[in-house]
Length: 84
Image (cartoon, rainbow, N blue to C red; front, side, top):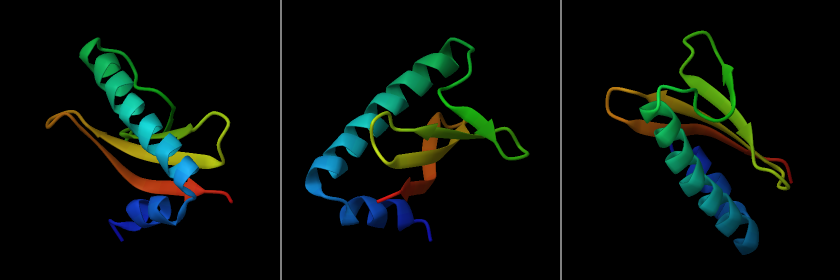
């Protein structure tokens, strides 16, 4: 189950795969900077524990749900939904 996001990306056309990869890199940088500044990371909070965020890639049929782990300064993407 933990590799489903990667499998979804691998099934995408190369151009979309590249766009999603670039977005994830930018998301990690932006979320890290927001957390360092004491602000909310990008996206809307979902779930009960307040650590999950949902963001849609602008102009692409892709939604990402990610988890912030403040202790180890890491983002994990358990859900990557490609509507295509």
